[in-house]
Image (tube, rainbow over all chains, first blue to last red; front, side, top):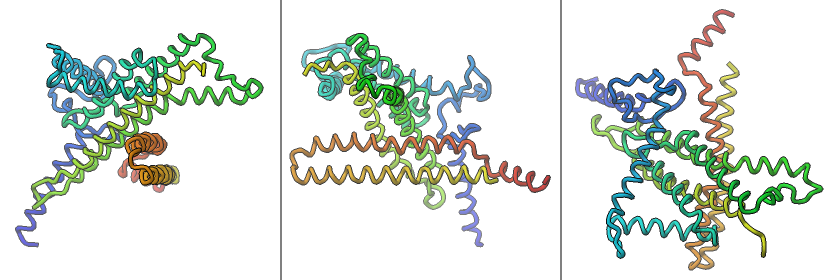
Length: 270
Length: 93
């Protein structure tokens, strides 16, 4: 081999190792392949020591979710500090968002829309912001663990059961025993069907986000190098697809919560 | 040895079948949405929304299989550890 191709080979090898080191930096003992976060660059942080009972890797979704909340609150307060009758700039953008959400949910909820749109709108904005958060370098989506998504799904579960019992009192449980003579067979199936709702909501959101993060991390590990030095960011195509699918998943979560809520509070007086 | 092999085979076959079923379902949904749009172009917006929502719901079943696959992948050892285990099994036998 000539001297030039030998050095080119060496440069390419070093460049590949640097790219892989970034992806391997945050790999824990389990098969969690992900890009590094800003916690990996804090000098005094011990990754195996438990701070308040949880390792820094377990604190990461909590910190990220808190940052997302801070960002949403800060942005809203910034946009509405001087509310005007004819909105301009950030206030106009927020008004578009709120009005679109209201119209979107009013189809499903009917006349109870005013009461539940704050909760469901918060779900949508919070989830879509959490999903996008992970596409920023050095940050992770809090929704790529089952903990966050299960918490959100449990909120939906508690809210729609609570509202159903509040409006229909004990007649809410009548749909379990609808054909009374078939009750012993249908009752377990109905209960399982009810319990599977928060499970499916949480696993759908968590699985999608984990798949996206895994694919982005794998593509970062496999970046090709032009002339051995200049990297080609092929993972940006996956980031584009992740933007689309994150939006769709946030919409699906909100829509399904609205549908479950409207099913629980419907009064069949046709 | 068969334990790890079966885990690996199970993951691949599971995800493959889930992708097959998901692809078939979404293909049918998209084909009927296209047909409806071809018949009535002014209903395209409504059809598109229903299509996206339906596709996401069908895809969530494939995602369940992916989650089980990721869960099982955590039970597989790294290649070095697997070589150690096989050496111990065949050496100490």
